[in-house]
Image 1 (tube, rainbow, N blue to C red):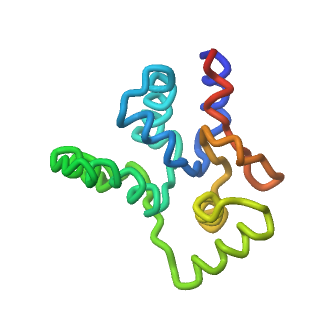
Image 2: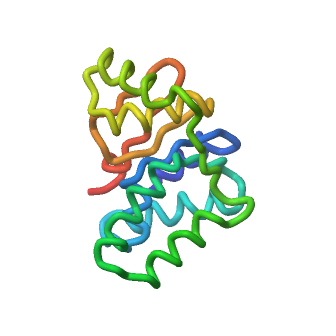
Image 3: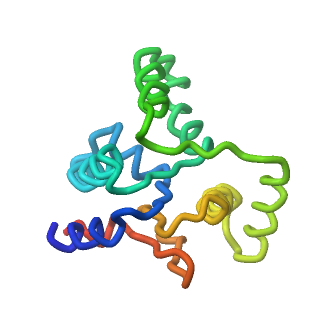
Length: 151
């Protein structure tokens, strides 16, 4: 975990886009990743890191509880994202879908990945934390691959 501690330090006081898989690992208490993602989210909760998600992230996380008709999980997830001074949930403006499609086409990405990347870019994130190997760092935004910190 020392390497992850250094990554957390690099992200301090920066805007970090949080991909859906990071939050799924948190909600599911995924044994392999939970210690890392919970530590990351603690930094967001204490405002050391400015966490950003898309409304798409919230929707993706709610699919399974809705499918299972798990009203407790639905309420918990909605309350989690509604917390004040925790994560910024970015809402999408007109043109978002078309711009995301263009980004997907230009970069050869899946549309949903392009939508997440578009949100990260439009909200001026410095970092993008994920487990999805399709995301790569650029000069404008560093991608933190959570998989790199697990044995």
